Image 1 (tube, one colour):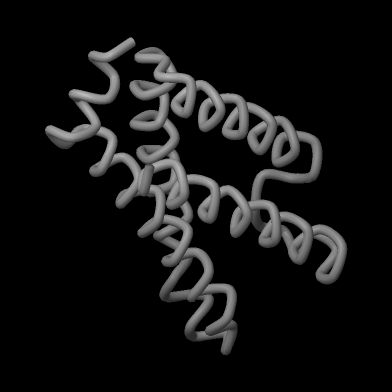
Image 2: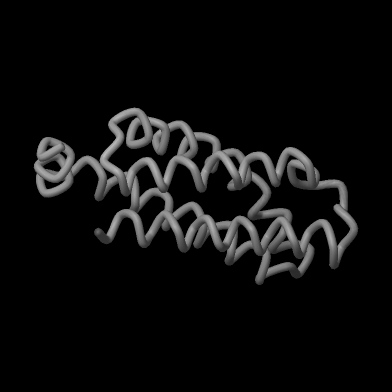
Length: 117
């Protein structure tokens, strides 16, 4: 299912961003911090696994994580101004993949797939 693939790629981008921000840049005063970031990644992984098992609760939870993914978008202008185009790029890419995944989860094909449960 394309939605699950998009969500896993977004998850990998989030994990990479957390690693780069915390390990390479020492936190740099932005982001959730290592403990909250790891907890978020674990919860997101559980949600994607739940979606792949046709959990309606997990499917609804993807909307919550998409809404939370809007928050870092406000940093994009600052990142670009600071010359951090790569960071801006993976922030936008992660959001776009989450949005794509959530969109695909609520299409007719996905609705039929969840109904087969």
